[in-house]
Image (cartoon, rainbow, N blue to C red):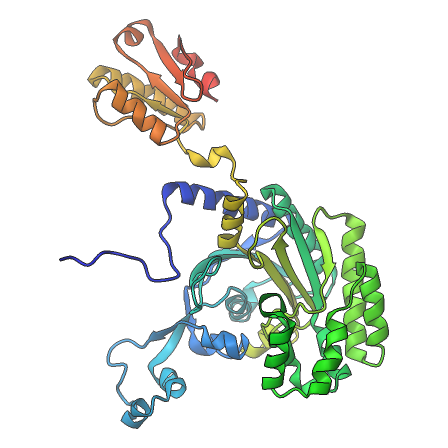
Amino acid sequence: MAQKPSTPKGTRDFSPLEMSRRNYIFDTIREVFRLFGYRQIETPAMENLCTLMGKYGEEGDKLLFKILNSGDYLKGVDPAMIECHDTGRLAAKLCDRGLRYDLTVPFARFVVQHRDEVQLPFKRFQIQPVWRADRPQKGRYREFYQCDADVVGSDSLNNEIELLQLEDMVFSRLGIRVAIKLNNRKILAGIAELIGEPDKLVDITVAIDKIDKIGLEKVDEELAARGLSQEAITALHPILQIDGTGTERLDKLAALLAPSEIGTKGVEELRTVVDGTMALGLNAELDIDVSLARGLNYYTGTIIEVKALDAEIGSISGGGRYDNLTGIFGLDGISGVGISFGADRIYDVLSALDLFPDSTAACTRVLFANFGTAEAAASLALIKKLRGEGIAAELYPDQAKMKKQIGYANAMGVPFFAIIGESELADGTVTVKNMADGSQQTIPVDKVAQTIA
């Protein structure tokens, strides 16, 4: 018996309807990217493993998909390493490449590799799939698309303000109500100093970044397991629970972090971004969230996360400032900031809220019936003219009963069904049926385009 075919867990096939809807998302985001002056690039699906390792933190490194070397990949490997299940060192021996985890690190590599061709500041966007060896669950996949916009070569906080405007425009066009959460990595560094654990910044950020998922009590347990003292954990609680309006939270943080130079700078930067954004106006809610950490190690300043207000799902966009990501590839002093849209989660939100336009359900505007050789030839001639005017049209390929052809049009969601039969052929007319209300009219050939447009 043949094995039942399936896709790997965490991956999916996409039907024509799903692709039409996905392209609606991609096209919306792409158009906004271009309005803000971003230019498109692409990078390979795989990168050298040394490019990826160490850029995403300890947990991120574990989620990298590694690719076995070609040929005899066990050649030169010490058998004792296999017997003792030393997977870390073994992977380093067996794998030189890995699938990209995100688009930001490959972008940093691109900037360094093509430095002589890139004009700074450089604004790029990229829409491509990424892969993570995560546990598949609702809203979390092993293969998914990211839509990134980054600007490198500028320290200006105007970039953050513009990116928040960009986020707002995308979600306004998609019809999704969102809350944009903001924090600053320097504030987190100041908090680590304030509670007496400056060397535990990474441990603190990795743990508190999970507060929405696992709750404060579990975060406390993880912090303790990572070596933080009970006094430090207790001191952290009131900071994470700061409330009030955005301005009030910033004022409270400024007072708390006054002893910390880096913490104070973080508050100042965040205040500049918030004030500049609100001066321009925003449809989205803007929220200062002290617990927002985004566990990626390369963030150094502003941190951004976007959540849908009307759907239970994780973040649907996020990003932040990274001051020297290119430094790991030998090019120091290139600051950058960027955001990433999670197209797959956005799709799930639009589906759950029934926000996809009806136009995404069909790509063909009119289907012509096929009644024979002469009728089909006349239909194809008219179809060519309609396509030249930008109207998607097609001919049912085979002669078949009218019921079957209309049934096909219904199943494909085609809004109009056109008939050139024997009488229409003689009169130079076309009978056009509106599939939505069942009405039909016979019109001259040259009136078809304006009738179905």
